Length: 399
Image (cartoon, rainbow, N blue to C red):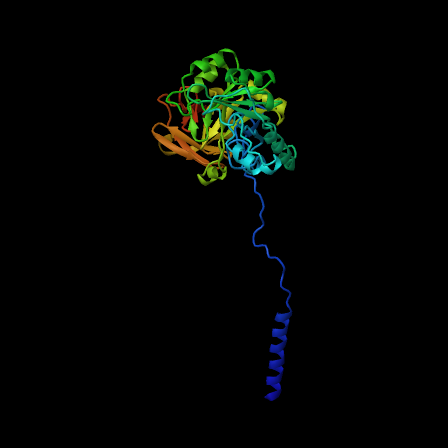
């Protein structure tokens, strides 16, 4: 018995000693901080790729709270293919604080910011001392981490009093430092001289109407405006769509992001964006697509733009297949969505959800002549000119 007790005691001592000898790690990682890209699957349409773009964003170099590098990471994680860093030319609210922070580099003198807020103050001949090309350069450098997958379009925002003049993004700029002028109309002309495309941003912001002001009539009349931001964040300006059609302007959906883009995911949506129909993701091809008006605007699950482009995009996204005869001879069809964007199908008074990558069935009774009806419905989350939902028709088939 004593011998057995001794053996057990020695075994226990070995276990304790083995535990004591176990090496304690220096560092334990519970979660890998791995950036995950949200892949947004869209179809090819008439031989063109559909790229996801945000052409209106801001950083700490104007009036937002993230760096251009962080904006690029967000853009990639959010599934974008095209991105533009469009910091304000005339509104840079962080600049006075930056100058105080850098006082040791200026001999301790208190340097005042120049023309950093011409929304509230009149523009002066002093010009702008900051290097307005830095945000784009930082974004371009950060985008190299993703190879050729994320295209950076150089740009900036020409910013003046919103009710009478408004805000305008200059895209495809070559030197943001040569755009500023005390006359906002001349600033637009300066951007156009560089070959920039000019977008009229959030045309209904801080106003009661989207009707053009005297300044805008002049800017449009000179041919300075190439497109309109019909969606900005969660705001939609449907009246401006007719203007785009009449004047052959492109239509954009943009975040105008100042906060974190994760707020879109928190609300259950992709970020507001422009769908660009182009042959390839290059500056030349994307510019050509904009000039031809080959864009749709997306916000909070809604898509708006040219009626024919909406039709083509939907039919490339959703297929219709005959299944069987239902009750009283009704023909039953399957609608299959092969994309990341969900749709709302309106048939009469009924609204059916067609979620991303799912299939639903719809049934249609025969016409009075005994022939099968065409499969017809409206897409309740698509918008064409006149604030109307497009009507989609698939040819009925009983085979």
